[in-house]
Image (cartoon, rainbow, N blue to C red; front, side, top):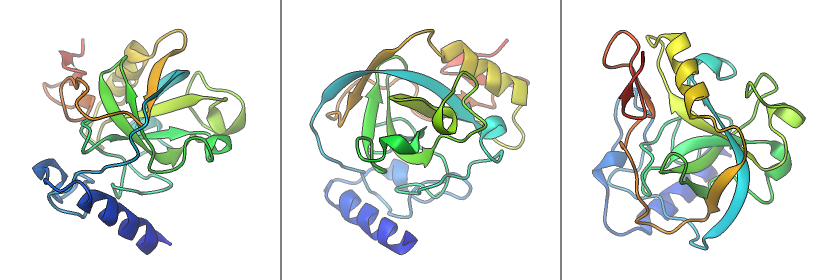
Length: 201
């Protein structure tokens, strides 16, 4: 089954034509095995209102970067660009509307994401209902590593989580603005790292 997933991803990446070095395999980075690729999906921009939360290394289930359904990444990853969207999760009841491999754009953090994971019963923290999410709810990968300060990652998640629903674009077009491509949470500068370009305090 996984071989079929990788084959489908390879076909989609090849469809982009021009390559993007950001998807080159990198040790420990979790990038796609398809070099110089751009993950292209259906472009049919559909605005919706949805709940968004964030998860990372310390509150993944289990802690780490494992994901339930790899599509373009072996593990949770991505730089938030159109060609290399970052992993997100939603509840399994959304499988038909938000299938694995679907791309979204979240203006709240100005980044692209791709569904590669399921919400787990242990989270998100504000979640409820089936498997941690309820209805149209996107849990967005924030990053972190084994060496991250767990409380700093969680603080970044909390700081970025809005109180109510926000606009999300399903099947977005390319060329939308992306702030600080790369992981949302980064370990540098020490000791607490950076949250969407701002040093944690």
